[in-house]
Image: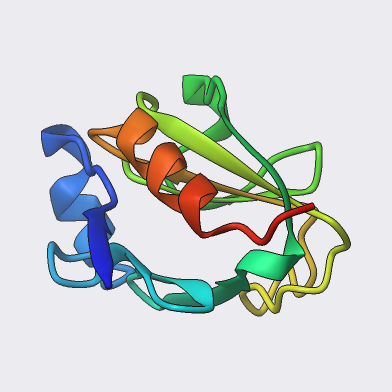
Length: 127
């Protein structure tokens, strides 16, 4: 298992505590079969077989910080507008949070986004 911390900019750390996004509850853990994401009250399990594509993406300030829904049906679990990685799903089958049950994409913010993408790509099943 490999653990990546979800980046939380210093200016947002105090407000993010309101949703439970503390240091210990802002992580993405790569297990044998899925990405187990915890961001405060949000908990997602993204099976590797359901991932279509991974890429770094822009997350403009107006999309917000925290548990967010972008217009392109992306569920954002972000604590920073920098280092955001988008996980595109083959089908919207991942159970999201209460107000967005089946997102098309998941966005997570990392201090080392390239390392996260490389680690996940190593775990994806061969096409």
